[in-house]
Length: 80
Image (cartoon, rainbow, N blue to C red; front, side):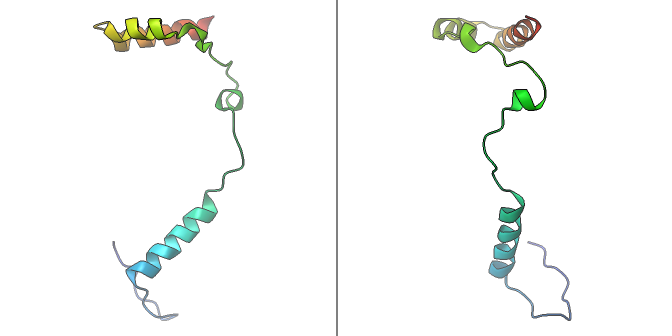
């Protein structure tokens, strides 16, 4: 960890004190305010996940081009 330059205002802080200070600042900066529906927040209709049955996912997993199949599946569900 890179130390901050010494200041004339106070004593030099230990690594543990600096770590604690940074954790306190971060904990105050990141505060949960509840659940956010990301789809609604960006104005996109929620995808229909009902098509993702266990059988469908197993079949998709066995495809040699499964990543391409997943992209095609995602683009088909957003155009409906």
